Length: 267
Image 1 (cartoon, one colour):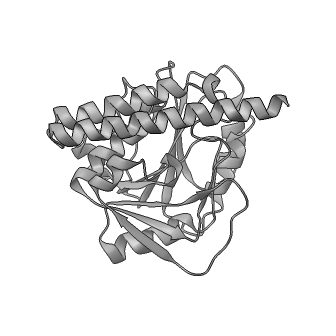
Image 2 (image 1 turned 180 degrees about the horizontal axis):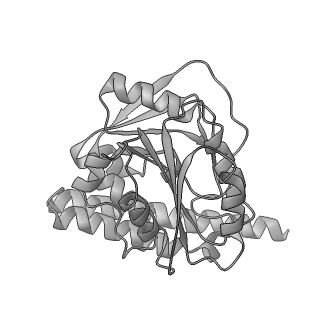
């Protein structure tokens, strides 16, 4: 008997997320587009995440896998989940975020319409806006050099493209998602659904606490991504120099902004 292929594999890494994983899973279960499987890789949790996952999913008809691994980081967990999945498209979700109920439906429609291998959506930290107007922008590799244009829970990528660029860099703990998007955008453009907003995040990329949230570690991850692009001959020495300077200037701005925010909170 052959393997039954599904359209989407929903890839969810989790680590001690017992307080949020049910919300994330329920947002997947509520999807209006139903042709998906759920692959959860537990990256060494010590809480009761596993029990909550089974309580949430076992009563449903959805196909799912729960895989436990020793702690190796989110990138390794996502790669492991992909390895154990069968979907044509990989849709990533973090265990503390949630999707709009029409996320997969809308993304699949435009995947087909645009023949896209790499598609994303904007996100919000507030309630979904439920806009009926659809707006899409196209970003290429040079656009990604200036800034990470997407967030992991927003992004869908074909299995073929994911495999072509060798997935996430499991040795990288910071900015590893940006590393993958740079590699993917070198071969295929990213289409971003600007409206409606289809993902709600519950934490900021650089953290609300500024310096204590590893700003420098994030910056080092970004700089290593640019070095990879240079070493891989995606960019030349001149572009490499200017993008490093630009990245460092953004880092300095973040540090100053963080210091000012902390000072204002003390007043």
